[in-house]
Image (cartoon, rainbow, N blue to C red; front, side):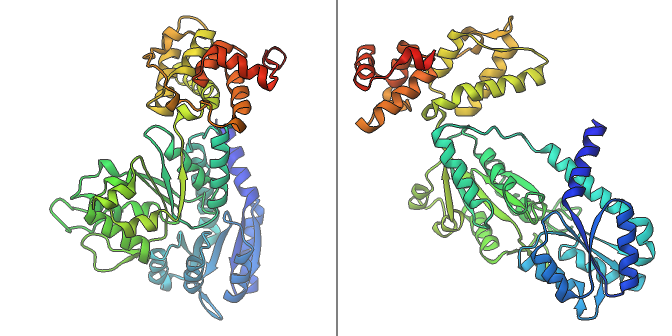
Length: 454
């Protein structure tokens, strides 16, 4: 495990460089030599103006190490310029002891740390390694996202790929259990600030009286029980993504406060005199129709406009049956690891049960059933009894393969037959048509079942 971690940290070092902003050429070279001996790549810069040019081409993984005072201004001005222009590189200030107070103030603007110049030789490399270690730990903590290959999810993947690099707010719509948070994580992972925090908030679990403090933090003494300063979700997500799950559950008062923070990119911790910059990307999700909520005066229309700059709608699992078996295999492998089992697959009865179940709980329900089956089965293959599914009838309105237009019929029949491994009885059930109708359609379109699907 340590070897894997070391390998991951080396990979991070290979992707990054340290931009050293120092006007004294001798000292600049001295610092770069220290870094080069430890395997770090460096770039030497001597003025704020040239630092801005270097940052235009810099990678998000790079780190800026800047002297506090430079010939054309203070590096704090460079930090402000970076944040205004969405440059998310980590920023470290070098300073003399007499300037420590100013350096501490810079941390309020988003600098990562400061180092007295007298201690650079001893403190710089350990600080950089701690940054790299934290980045590797964040990478390891990321939950694997299963890439679904069904038609609907290929379209979602395209939309995620388009919006991820932007700063647009995204609203994800979908039933409970469809995987809205996974899509939000995917957006964050493909963004330019993927190395920054991803903070998920369950808006439905927030007590109305505590929600402002939860979002914006509070200062000591702000209210009874506030015996210390507390950071809020906005500060925790600084530079990254704030995911608001079930955003429709927020009170109207909290919606107003959230709207202001998003609109003006500023917020005030409870009880504080000053404001903080809200530098986060908002991704929200809901399982309800927020337009209806607006009509019913339960949700602010202006906030909805802010949240739905880009919309991604996730279909129900029952409308994506081509994803069911790949997902089932994915969860089976995870369950094997977590439960210490060695279940290798599904028999025909389990496969039929999985494909014809209505999945009212969507992907969340599928995962739960697979974990149950892996735990229950006494062999290396899951049978339908191990799944403990309730056998609801499947209506044509809930089946993705239901025939709609003449142009779609052949494609849908082929997809259903593939899912059923050529089993015409099961395919007919997936299509919500009779066997005789299916046989007629197969003959009409000249589909060769035996050769194609066995």
